[in-house]
Length: 100
Image (cartoon, rainbow, N blue to C red; front, top):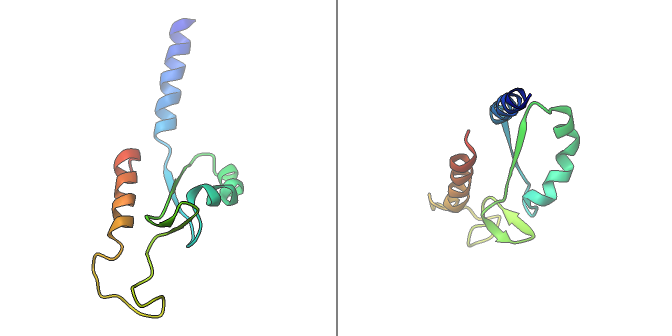
């Protein structure tokens, strides 16, 4: 009986680890924790997927952004090619730690 339970646990863990993932990105001024309850219905409808939530790299603890406003404000563009690098680095870190 112990061998069957162990094998069931191992196989269950492998199946769990192989679920495809959906990366969920909150909107401007939100957080991953604040966005997650809004996704509960979709998560319940798609139990075969693992939902991964990320926080934008800019803003404050309760109000995160994926891209900060440019120095001149929202109405002014930026030509800095590295403007969103912190968010790109954060997403790369999630991919590295949690897999594709």
